[in-house]
Length: 330
Image (cartoon, rainbow, N blue to C red):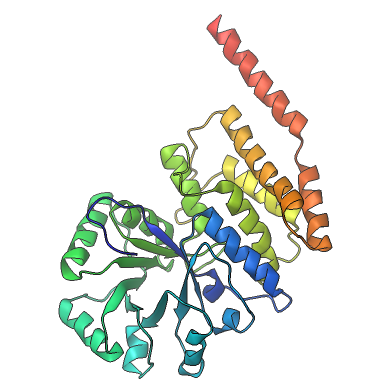
């Protein structure tokens, strides 16, 4: 997460393993595969706390790791794995929580960040901050206002800035998108449905709406895989089978809405491109069957999901669109 002078792509941090309730039945291999899929989808760092760390014997390569130090009782768990960063809030530092460096120091979003405040925090960790995170509700901003805010922050601190928007004012997704475009080095959000944080899926769908395609560093196929394992790791709608997840992903592509405002967002893609996108989901699931050691119960659910998609219908609709296009050109 080193700051560059040229325009850099925003690093995405996932905090789902800290913010969502883990299913007691979730096996370590489920969590392992979930993290691996997050990395393949475009997540660069995964944040975790004692709940996940105490379950795991090893962590997959391909992503970086952030230890969330929220309780002095579990501070020793920072030695369990080779964490890239330790996250600690300024309030926790004031309460005497000790952390290892390199450290991410978290401040409330509504604080007036100053060099003096950062120096005070650095004095409490007996070292320098590697990243500064601002977490909380941000006001609805125009793109120009977001750029002005980022410029002020970068003129105040010399380390990378991580924006972790919460959704109390229903602005989390809007903030994530605009601060990313404004030059935030990092944005923290959650894979899955969260009432508190911006959704990583909605972030990607919004990028598709803006650009017509995903940037190269993100993978929709891997997102589909992560969504499948997400349902095995976290407490939630256990009635949602993998087939229903696939339906939800298909529905999201065709009926995309802004998660903050509820406004309908129309993708600038043709029916052919839409069907190819659906086929990408399907292919990614089929590759899971062929290329991974999947437990039998999960395999059966994936096979049911594959049966949901009617390839013949997709091809028929593409053919119909082609015929309409040819008719218009004649």
